[in-house]
Length: 297
Ligand code: HEC
Ligand code: HEC
Ligand code: HEC
Ligand code: HEC
Image 1 (spheres, rainbow, N blue to C red):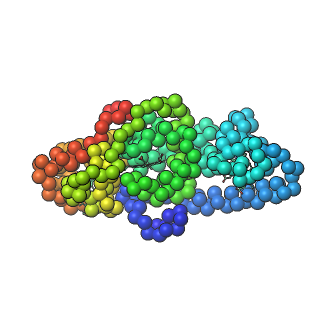
Image 2 (spheres, helix red, strand yellow):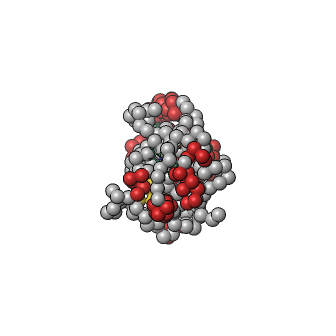
Image 3 (cartoon, helix red, strand yellow):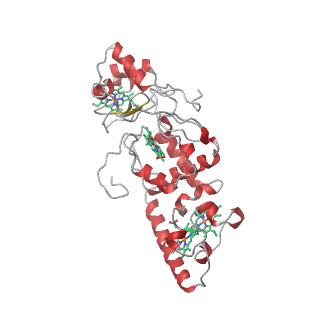
């Protein structure tokens, strides 16, 4: 699978329970064509039309009843120069969240659920506090969030989201963050991203890290494996998968899984991993997330 930048062959499988299939393959091409066609239309308009100040010199009015251009698109309305007007503006694909009932926001919600963003992040008031609280990003440049999702930080899984899906997730984050504006004085979660001493001897790194990764509250990002799911927040209700249907993961079930995954799921690919009872306790502690305000049962 090639990503947005055409870099081929990045490992994207298994970060989510069911692989990472495109929800709308081809959607991006359609979006690009639309922008291209619109672009030519507007260029022609700009050349032939009477020069005016601001966005309206180049664009027709739309959604007037809902506000002015910069209330939804940001940018700079006090110039007739495109590059300045468009500086840090919100393009059409990321502006859906400004309208009620946006289909992009709905799609982003489904994706966030399926790929388990909340095993690490708080989103719309719910989720673990292992990484940035996404509800605090309402004033961010959505373009930057798009980049953060397409080219994720080390401790965030690379889901290889392409245009339409990545844009939908940004719309969902912006919608939630805009709705929750004002919660900004919430205490930020402390996460240890720089692995401390002892990580090399860390049990997870030694016994699981070749296949798995996990973002942990105590030791930050652990492991280097990309063939198995990221186990961050395994025991929380935000982990996107269960031990068995309607049975959430817990320490005891993890021990049974490690004893023999195939007893739990006949088709499991993971081999049994020998751990002593003491090691099982350490692993369970490591995968525990501190209770967060959003994590009601
Ligand atoms: C000098 C002309 C000019 C001005 C002024 C201008 N634009 Fe544009 N805009 C364009 C052109 C041309 C395009 C077509 C795509 C491109 O070339 O980026 C465009 C595209 C857009 C798009 C769609 C781009 C996308 O990728 O979704 C939005 C949204 C937009 N402009 C908003 C604004 C807003 C808001 C303002 C005022 C703050 C503004 N523009 C001012 C010329 C202008
Ligand atoms: C209530 C929010 C809102 C306001 C106000 C608004 N827009 Fe938009 N704009 C959007 C959304 C959402 C889209 C994405 C396409 C859609 O849903 O219609 C968009 C799309 C665009 C596009 C891409 C072409 C298109 O129609 O799809 C341009 C250009 C644009 N807006 C310019 C402007 C300008 C100029 C103004 C001010 C006159 C403005 N917008 C006011 C929300 C808004
Ligand atoms: C295994 C944990 C994990 C999962 C799962 C995860 N992320 Fe992240 N994410 C991170 C980390 C770590 C960062 C780096 C910034 C930080 O939080 O310190 C990050 C950063 C981000 C940022 C940039 C925040 C900023 O201000 O720079 C966005 C946006 C984001 N993630 C969205 C998502 C979305 C959407 C999903 C689900 C599709 C997701 N993340 C799933 C761990 C995760
Ligand atoms: C040699 C590779 C490998 C090692 C080492 C490994 N695993 Fe796994 N693990 C997998 C694979 C592959 C899966 C995906 C499910 C399957 O088909 O078995 C998996 C699945 C899991 C799951 C289920 C996740 C889910 O969402 O269903 C848990 C929990 C788990 N492993 C925990 C661990 C722990 C804890 C360790 C270390 C003590 C570990 N694994 C070591 C390969 C490995």
